[in-house]
Amino acid sequence: MDRADLVHFRRRTLAVLQSAGVSLAELVYPPVCSGCGKMVGRRAALCGGCWTHVRFIERPYCEVTGVPFDHDRGDGLVSPQAISAPPPYERARAAVFHDGVARKLVHGLKYSDRADLAAMMASWMLRAGRDVVDDSDVIIAVPLHRARLFARRYNQSAELARALARLSGKQFLPGALKRVRATRQQVGLGLRARQDNVRGAFLTTNQQAQHFIGMKVLLVDDVLTTGSTVEAATRTLLKAGAARVNVLTFARVASQGGETLYA
Image (cartoon, rainbow, N blue to C red; front, side, top):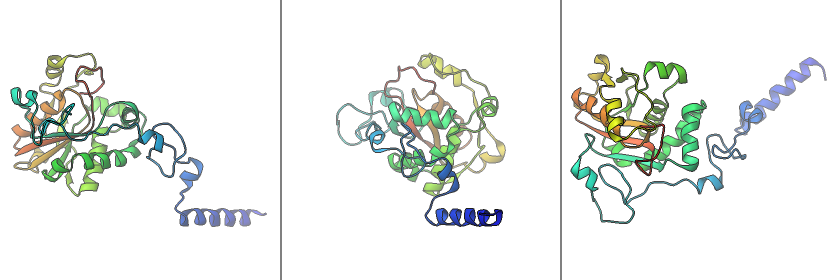
């Protein structure tokens, strides 16, 4: 086979693969399960075994904070914490518990350049938080400080927010909220220390703030632990003129006392 025949053969092979829905990247790097690495039918997917180990958050949970209840306490019930110390946001929702396979997905998106996971994760978020998505006008992501953004190259929360905007048809406002203070990692900090750590960390930009004044804002983050970060960000948005703020995260830590890298 001469060079011309070889080029023709390669082109025909690529055309056949494309017509079958197989890209060259998939041929060289076949899709594997994002949880365990087994071969699967498409990228950014889970195998049947890993899927069964994802703990989705379902009702019953507190209608305000989204904290799951250990048993059904009736429709519309609010947790004692939400009554004694009401959060500044309207409602918070999360798709899954932050453990096992779900934790691997978060780490893949956050630390391993797996931005391709955002679409799948956002679809789970939309299912879990349809009520807060429908009750919002615009979507804003919890930002990273510029130093951390430079180190990671992208903001995982912004990737989730962008994917969620595509799925829901809501407007995403990138850069509407800035992290102006480089906060320390929240791991090992108690609730009060976490709150102090993020106090004054956020600021709205004058250029973007005009777009959400009087609007119902959906604030998106990857993981919720004590809520200190989203509460600080919510206060900033409300002070800047947002009518109200809902919160939607991919995961939440089951126990607020658990060690985590997240806020």
